Amino acid sequence: MADTVTVVYEKGMLRPLEPVNLQEHQRVRIQIVPEETEPSEEPTDATEQLIQRLVAAGLMHSQPKRVSPPPDPVSEEERRRLADFIGRAPGKPLSEIIIEERGEW
Image 1 (cartoon, rainbow, N blue to C red):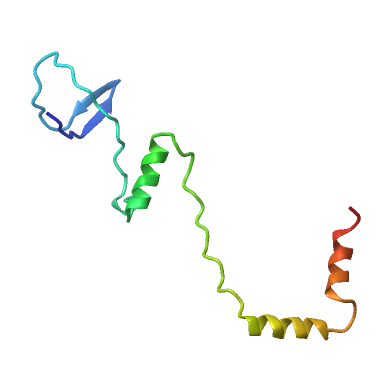
Image 2: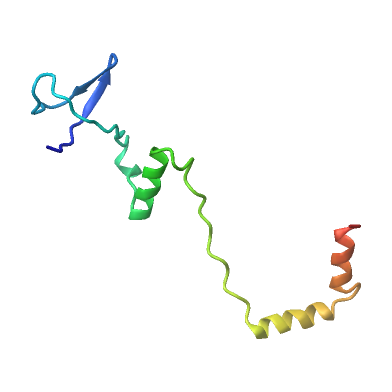
């Protein structure tokens, strides 16, 4: 018999909130799964559910940071236009500026 029962922890004991179909002194195995405090905290997809389970099981320390997708690549035409613009800029060439900013090795 596998069943899910909501319980409350009080004074060192787990107390079921509804009647259970068990015999006196019957041994059972329980799994502690905290209830969400607010329904809005429920994960919205399977990936989120998996992450929450891994965190709860101690296999993951926290939620992973969301990484934004990379920007769209620059077209070859745009890359050439920028290179020409930088090449015509007054002053030192960009390569010299970068070398100076790196400092001594």
